[in-house]
Image 1 (spheres, one colour):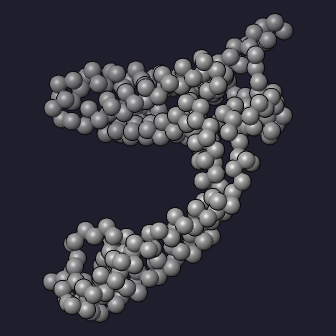
Image 2 (image 1 turned 60 degrees about the horizontal axis):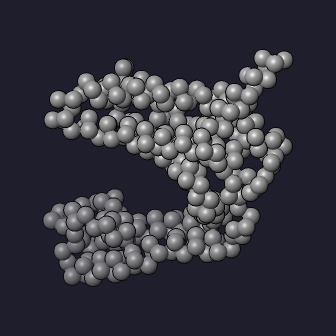
Image 3 (image 1 turned 90 degrees about the vertical axis):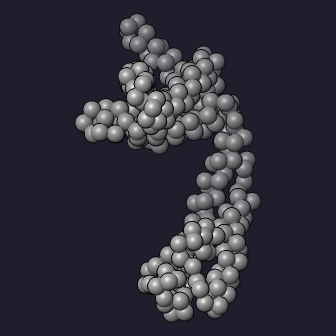
Length: 278
């Protein structure tokens, strides 16, 4: 019985260090983790420079293996310290943690696969929890909710833009049907319409007739207005969202891994398990 309690206690303590950003130990662990992630990405960037790789390739490789092993231990520790490992493994951060660990192992079988460790940059998203930026956590949740609520409007808008680009591309093909201008087919003309409407303007295809240039000018001006529409849709939804309903707490339930509980919450709002330890 005592042995089981000791095992439970060390798992709880390890969980608080790995998952929680509220405790000094947890915050220190996550800040160190952030610096290790940044250092790892920096090593991959150095490896891509031929002159540096030729001279320090062995040292860079050994350093990357050490970091990979540390990340592997951390990943296993995250699985061990939760009562429902599947919840973590298939969560967003769980998948990112796994994908950021396996590239170096894949490099043993697939040449150049270690470059995929730049995926670790996504782990830096934990900075919002680590630095206890609750206001930004709440705002990100607010933004996500606004996106979900406005997805139908955005889908209709994108469909409209696609149809508009097909029509404009077809019109420009009829007007500029010339090899010199680059409008050699409707698909290429639609590609030009997309590039022009989004105000990217690569310049690989350009109208040479006066009418074509006039229509192109109208499309460019239209592009500025179209770009602003999705922003307006999302902003409108965010205004309607009640920010007070968005949880800001960074507590993570040891039982079900549910995050973002209400401030001063002692029990998980999903499973009822106690989340405050001390």
